[in-house]
Amino acid sequence: MEQDKNKLTLRMSRRRVGALLIGGTSLPVLAACGGDAPAAPAKPEAPKAESPKAEPTKAPAAAPAPTAAPAPTAAPTTAPSTLKAGATITFWNDMGGPYPGLMEKWRDQFGGKTQVKVEVSGGMGDFTNKLTAAFAGGTPPDLYRYLQENIPLPAAVERNMLKKLDDLIKRDKVDLSDFRKDSIVLYQWKGSQLALPRDYGLQLIYFNTEVFAKAGVQPIPTDWADKTWTFDKFLETCQAVMRGGAQYGLILNRGWRPWASWVYSNGGAVVKKDAEGLATEFAIAEKPAIDALQFLQDLMYKHKVAPTPEEETALGDQLPLIQSGKVAMRFGNPGDNSAYKPTGMPYDVGVFPLGPSGTKRGTGGGGTGWAIAGPTKQPEEAWAFMQLITSKEGQLGEVAIGQTTPSRVSVASSPEYLAGPPKGTKAFGDGQDYVVRDPVHSKWPDAQRDAVTKILNEQLWTGKVPAAQVAKDVKERGDALLKG
Image (cartoon, rainbow, N blue to C red; front, side, top):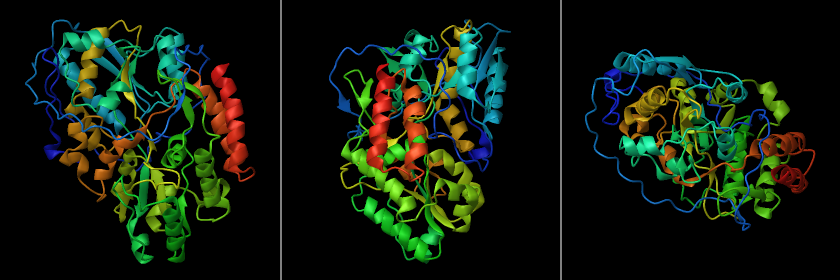
């Protein structure tokens, strides 16, 4: 989404940096957020929960209306005296495509105003392992994209990966009211604010509208409160578009957040949690979760409306399959729009179906944040740069390259973000009220990798074992990892 003349004005706190010029183009690459977790780093000890009471993590209750964005105030255009001219900070990010170019624009604007050098590293592969290795070796980046889905807050705190921001926020009178409250809370632990939100993502359905029209099928609803779009209706839709000529109804996204969204939307949970929000044990072996997982397996092996993993590999790249109409639907996050939009294909988005045991949809998500390393030797410079990239105009820069689901209310409701295609972009922001955050536990990456992902890959997605036994095996192994 291009901005007017690609010119934006960045407003920081009254002590920080002024104007920013940003813009860019999108690349047809599918966003990676929501896939399986990478190999986890060395295992820290699990924190001790203070309360034994456990409740399942299910679809969230209705969220209150977001707070309106505050009126912007002019920012100084000179570098604050607290910043050291000639200082250098390092800035790491795993996102590729057009994102490294945006990082360089931020770097150049910040350096021009402050005389602080920013060494940027974008599109980094094997990001989590490189990041944890840098911390272990005493050479972490000053500022980096923090993926809580890979390194949960308790583990990051134990490793001193996150600098507390409370005093800086208070000192500079930084107004956080334009951020979604739940996106801010996502980075709070033991009363401290440990990062600021970059985005606040979710899962939904992308579909080829021409395939739907040819089959005489109604478009997928964009209303997250809709009660007519159910698991059964979803299956009927898959079968109808295949009768209309599509080879498959959908590509089944087997990433962690996408498949978990089916569980949440059927009233189920993956884990139970205590009063502090820490995961205590797996809930995946309970009926709503089992039924959702069995439904997914049946889509491939019983109803044959989705390709098996082997068939999917043989089909090749997924985007051309949607574009050509061979496949009608695919699940993904709003950032995937940067892949669909340049194709010119007829497409739209819609919400997850509601399961027979569900009363409210839930979607895996929560997005990512920006964090300052606990051991940074340049806290003031890193903090000033963080304010720049988390500002409204900073997030609009991400909108311009099509790689964000904004955490700021004013950006998520902005004309720049809501401009189509697709027609149903309002579902992007509306869906943020239905996000279920990832389990919080220092050993969650181990449990996710060695229990959840491993067993689902070997048993559920291959069709070899029914969901009830799969869920039982995941719980048995996963509980041992969480409690070990």
